[in-house]
Image 1 (cartoon, rainbow, N blue to C red):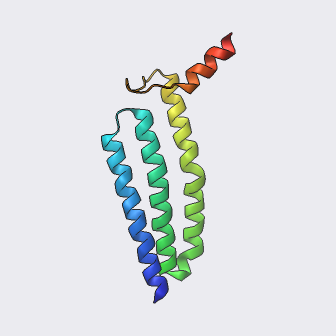
Image 2 (image 1 turned 135 degrees about the vertical axis):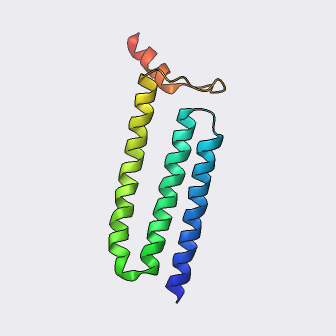
Image 3 (image 1 turned 120 degrees about the vertical axis):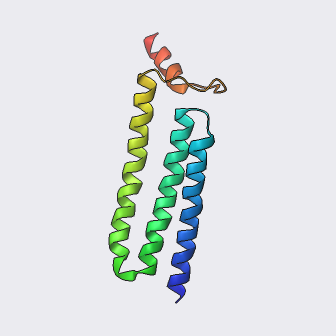
Length: 111
């Protein structure tokens, strides 16, 4: 009984994170900000949702744990690859962005 309540709480937290992820993708100004919102919030949302399902159905817990671990390892790596590819292909930062650490580091290396 208590594990069902805890599972639903995890599902609710996951739903909130997934909602915020979608909102961030719609509202943020450029691909780099959207990528961060989409990756961090959707990773947490998926983790909480999947673990919540594993808590509600104890026979599925270890399968859900492995899926959550896979998401935790692959989402940040794929997000980094997309962001780096966007930067290298010339996608511009939002005009309100004031810091470009990647450009600063590359300029120092050239000197």
